[in-house]
Image (cartoon, rainbow, N blue to C red; front, side, top):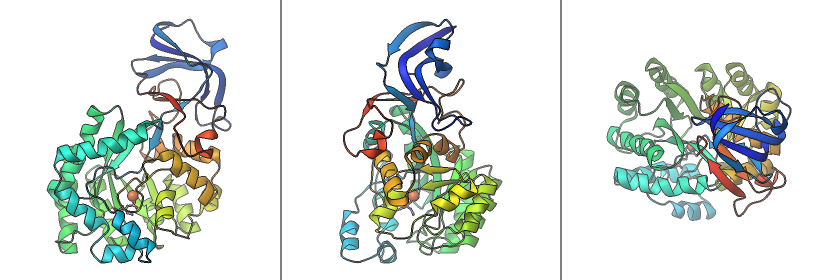
Length: 398
Ligand code: NIG
Ligand code: FE
């Protein structure tokens, strides 16, 4: 078999469905052609491989490149003052109602150029890359006007070309009502102007919304999702983060790719998600930073058979945490997820949350996005916080 590159002498966690645990292969070989996995399996069973390059991985572990399936990395400004205000007793919702929170980042982001946004987001992406992340979902939502929302999405699109990272842009115009607009007028603009434009200009394939007492109601999100689906876009939802507003069930009703946060989701909500195949994206960073006490119903998700992903939620307010690994550690310590669950949550299930079947597992025909680790046990990736154990990272085998 003629291929471009062969990786030998490694242990692989394929994360493939239908295999026990993480689908591990001892003494594995991975062959890459045209950016895809041409063959993967035990070295003893490998076909004759003719390659221009063979890379000996020295017995190291290989996993799929990690996927951060929920971030808000395109923004300007700083909100560390809000961290201090929360330490002094104000809540996230208090700060939002007083004109801070998302609105503060909107002011700074509107004042930033596309080049500024690309530069600021690049530094955040680099922090994720050094810990083995190869795909990042990137939301807009800090413009809340046509021009700035589209600028955020264009900046997200440029990151793919300028950084070795796959980017999945998501339109989050329904993040908050802009401070300078009436809510009905803004919803009209979202549904009649912004969503059709995002679809026509192919700036994002997915529409997200924030369903919450301080953001949009279930009826309003229903309207946004109906417009999104009419425009041929998929949907996902910030659901049940601070209160149970039935977000999980609404997401499921719209066949959402994922519902995210979910601290207040009920068992009925979990069952609806299972039925719809909606992924639960667990975001312990925001829970930690906001000193929340209500935990997402992990056991109900397990029982109902909901796929769980873990993401950083990297954003300037509730989760200024540029680390997917630390987020996974928190999902274990704070929410009781297992190491196996969070490993799948950063790979196969995160890919599902993005609606992608070409990444997230290491199987023939999938993209050769690899993270190579200098650890004896994969559990070390989440059992330790500190220097990255990443040895190398390949995007499409390169
Ligand atoms: O996912 N929940 C809403 N949106 C973000 C936070 C946005 C912000 O505070 O800037 C989140 O936590
Ligand atoms: Fe978020």
